[in-house]
Amino acid sequence: MIFILNFKYMLRYNFERVFSARGIKSSYSFFRRIGYGHNSARTLASGTKKYISLKDLYLMCKHLNCTPHDLIDYIPGSEPEGHALYALQKRESLVDLFNQLKDVPLEKMGEVEEAIRRANGNHKAV
Image 1 (tube, one colour):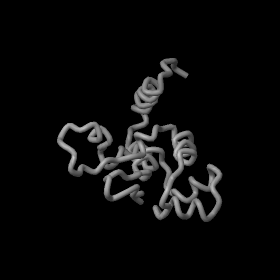
Image 2 (cartoon, rainbow, N blue to C red):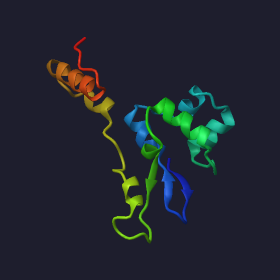
Image 3 (tube, rainbow, N blue to C red):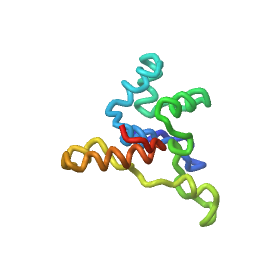
Image 4 (cartoon, helix red, strand yellow):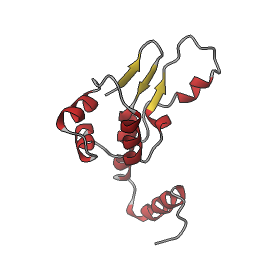
């Protein structure tokens, strides 16, 4: 599910990348859960919505705990190498931690939990 903003400018919304990182399997269900009606959720989930308002972008970022930068990709065009737009390029997918955690030995889970705590800025052991 890739959301194309405009072919001419080579910017696109890429929600799938963040959905995968957050363990969201159904984009339609996600959009319904955050308050969109059936039709809006369907067009957002299918990638056929032509325009995404700043309000919608804000709601998505709020519920995904991300920034617009995380949701927008740049596809290189005619801009010279090193142009500021290149900062919007990202790896296509983030690590699917939910699936990778299945294979972590139980005795290592404490280390994983501590690393997550540090990444979230919470250094206290629970």
